[in-house]
Structure formats: structure tokens, C-alpha cells
Length: 288
Image (cartoon, rainbow, N blue to C red; front, side, top):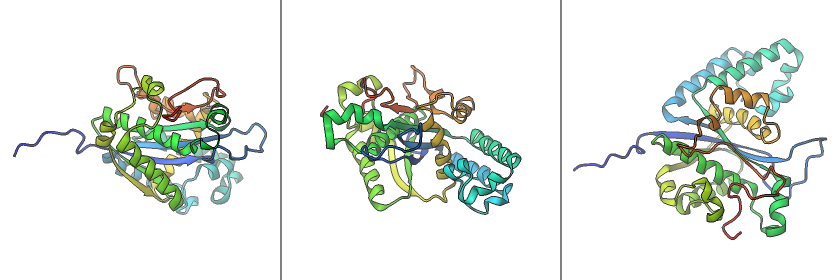
């Protein structure tokens, strides 16, 4: 029997997804002076066949730093030299060498970094007057946009997409799985007219492209990398010149550098960073 060739059948991208910030719209604002208030969701895209080499690079890096002692790389602890990374605070030379080698590790991995980041005050200013308590959890908007754009990226490379989120609690994991299933079955839930200019994938294309939803623990090397790269993408909504973000862009790791008018790909999504004064990237529910 003749078989129709399907280029999506054997070629897979993996999307390791972490989150940053509280997902509830009404979460109390930060008390720190000049603190940013966001919810971000995203991480790293990698071809399935490149996973082993990326993990080997991670292991090689860790072998040069016995101070890690098997501890997962964690962005907050590294940046604040806290908990398992307190040793970074005691030697400035060692800290700079560690951060430099960590940056090199990420920039040399065969990954593409991608996310959706929402400014909470801007989201509430825009949608609270219209939807009140019926506003979506920020993770629904962020997950849907990030995964749909990741699916576009995979399709541009004749690939299907496996989505992995970090293990948290069963309720959150079920919620994200529901978003994945709804996206796969029905397509984007946003207002079709407002979303049209972004060229969203149809439900049929998403069904063909979205292959699997899974959960990974913090022991996953690539989930740790997702955690490391998410923070600079979140900061990029407030500071486009953020040094870590610029490094990702210059090394070709940021998804934005792969996006052109010709291929129709879309980069990191910054939602509601205009203070809620105009409609952006299809966050509005279909009823809006």
C-alpha cells in the first residue's frame, strides 16, 4: 500500500515551558520600590534530535563547578546569590566567571527562546472595566499565545510540537493541559477579527502540529534552562536593553531573530505593556 509522505510525522520540536510571577489578575502588587509586576510563560524550543547534545553540554558545564553538587540551576537563587548559590556572594571573581560560563552555555546551545509576558497593571486597566471578575487567569492568555506561536515555528520547520511544563501542583497541571487540549481541538479562543492580523493557525493545523503535552520536574536539564532564559525575556518588556536579553538576541537564540514578514513567524509577545490604552495581540476573549 502506498503511503502519503507527511513531513510532520518524524520531525519534532520540544517546547520546555516555565512560568514567572503570579497568574491571578488580582494578585497584590509588589511592595518593592520600582518593582515590575508581570506574569510570563515560556522557555526553550529545541529539535528532538538536539536534546542529547544540549544535555551533554549542560553536564560538562556542571562538572566544572563542583560547588553545584547536583543542585538544579535556578534563576532567582543565582541572581540573588541565595540558598544553594550563596557561595557566589563570597568571591566576585568566581561569580563573574560562573555567570560568564553559564551565559556561554546558553548561547551555544541549539535552542530558541520564546515566551509571552503580560504586564498585570496594564491587563487589569484594559480588561477589568469590561469583564470584571470574569477576566481570564493570566496563564490562559500566556500559555495559548506562547504555544500557538511555538506551533507556527515548528510548522515552519516541517515539524510537530511536544509541550512540556514544569511540575507544580495537579490543579495547575490540569489547567494547562486543558488549555492545550482546547487549543488543539478548537484553535485560538480570542476574538477572530482582532486576531486576524496575526495570522493565527486554524484548529486543523494545530491538531496536526500539537503532538503531546507532558510534565517535567526541575531535574530536567532543559527545564532548568527554560527557567534561566525566562527572566530576561520578562525583563525585556520593561527594559529592551537588558543585557541578558541582548545576549540571547546577539547569539541568535531569541525567537525574534527568526521572524520575517515572509515566513510569518511571531516573536516574544509583550501584552498590555501600553498601559491598557489600545488593543494588542488578540488577548481579548471571543466575546469581546
